[in-house]
Image 1 (tube, protein in one colour):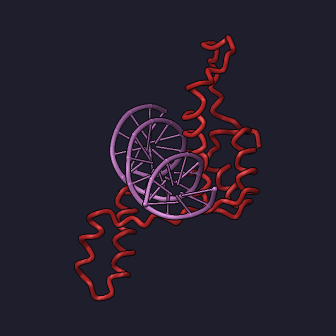
Image 2: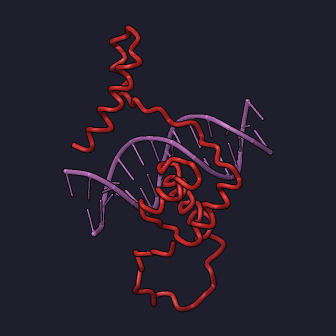
Image 3: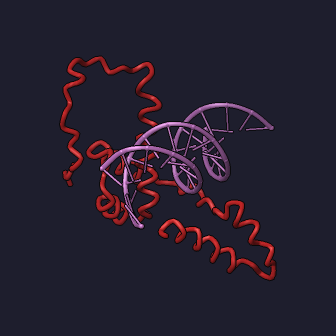
Length: 117
DNA sequence: TACCACGATCATTGA
DNA sequence: ATCAATGATCGTGGT
């Protein structure tokens, strides 16, 4: 059901745009997805995000909301930013940077509750 | 059932 | 015009 919600939303958006073109439905069937323009994040904002990322690479939705509010951004944008940040880190770190440090398979506490705020 | 994160991938922007 | 960086989206799996 919740999966249909976004789908229905797209339909409604298109329906609103159907300025006399009922055939627009085929477009929705295709993908009816309007990619938001590249939210150009200001350098200052990036700095704040990076700082938070260092503190918590995986903040809960609650932290994201707070952060987004502080930066005057959309939760989605902040969430996506964190996701991309994590991915990028992995993309660069594994190769040519094995992080020479013993004591590897010792970690047992994942510490999912990074309530550090 | 609803939500989150990750991987891959697309698409846009800036150099 | 082309490439690189990076945000936005889709699909999948886990809780």
